[in-house]
Image (spheres, rainbow, N blue to C red):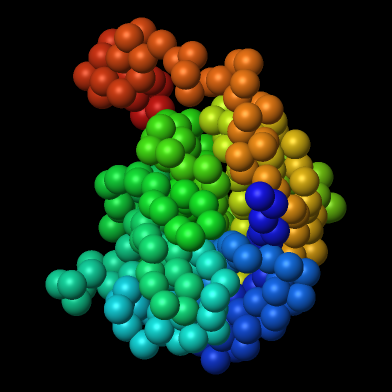
Length: 300
């Protein structure tokens, strides 16, 4: 069975009404092209931080505007569900925990009738921990169209994160980002920027590593001091880019056939089947000699 999917590259800010209007327009465009699953970026409801590092947006730095903190069962998510209708979408936002204080960089997968899964970002770059607490798990979940796993931005730099989702049966991994260009020595053409290169290579590698379909969404344009690199895309389990927006805003739309592609690409070399977990122990052992050495080098 073929399925049309779309990954979004667009600019989202603190203006929620503007965000909803943009979500509605992009969903209309995606539906017109036959898309039934649409991946929106990290922080698509309320925007991302305006900068990163020691001068980023923090709870203590009240001079800056933090993303609005939203509950999973709150009116903001309900509004997105109204817009979603029968389209399945993934979308990023700042989640407020039940304690009313703790904030997470989070994402949800939903349609008009149900929230199928949610995720709290595990890996935090460049001082993001000053603004958000970290999540602690990767789990895939079923939807009427595919089994999906979610990641946010920096997560894609860690092979273990995507592997956890693949081992939990994810057929599609959605990677939502607010991925900017390099902060120093930025390339004049952002498509040639070294951080754009890394963004794209991670997407290709993680799809191929795990032989899954990979949907990467990203913010575009600018927000605060950040210049986003766009490059939303759909990658097949062989690491082939089926569609991409490059730097521009818009939709990367592709038609996929999960069952047929998996049969073809996993029929011979099946990476998940051919693993050797009996020799991988040190990868996850924080007290191992190799892990200790890398920690020492990182703080040298």
